[in-house]
Image 1 (cartoon, rainbow, N blue to C red):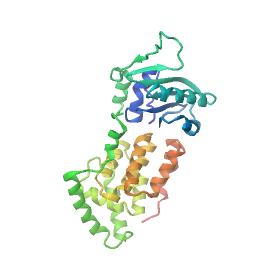
Image 2 (cartoon, rainbow, N blue to C red):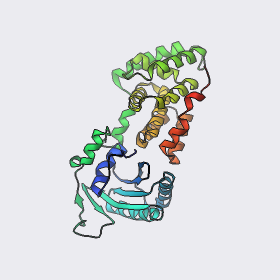
Image 3 (cartoon, rainbow, N blue to C red):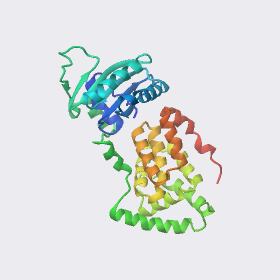
Length: 325
């Protein structure tokens, strides 16, 4: 996620405090890189790997940093000394000729130690304790609307399918919507016309849709022209309202009908700098529709590290390009 402009990192403690809010969750066994650029900042996270995989991981990391115009970076290694220190050292070497390294820090067991610090008084071998809850930066991040889940798995619950009675009601409404819209086939004029009407009516509503509305919306989004209408309107509406809508729709949609809402959520998260949520939404999409083409496009953007502002600009005029229905 992008670093909000008013949140300024001035120390390792600041970097540690803000990282969970930038990622959306508290990292473990991770290499985290906070990239600092002229116009914006961004955060990358990688799972810790064995030494034989360093070259591929670090080459990818360097490519992403350069492509996003990073001028400086803070490196954070979360985990045991034997897993983090060699990787941090090599990451430092990999990036040193391309940008300024502000700090290289190992974080473990509630303590941190800078690999760039040689002063035993400043950075004792046992590390220095930190308390995220006591950080003014964490308080500022919370005030700015950022949330830090305890783990990535807890964050993934945001798009997990509903269960119990909620799922029973949604399944019943979905069956009714199928009978209404799909009786004449997956590309019927009814599906298109009613789908466009529903998208234009519902997706800007700042409220939780009813089960009936959610089921009908999930069905009409199977028509690609209708899906594209929703896609084109994402960037014209309030991003927080859209995030709430597509998270909720992804959770409540039944089976394969979650694919389009999940892909729309992934795109929205991506262009708003929330790469973690984008990846989680793509995983949800892959569960129900492994070859969904919109998801593959977003996954390529993530893989190649295209800056969110570049993707936003490229798709910004999409609504005017759609054919008349």
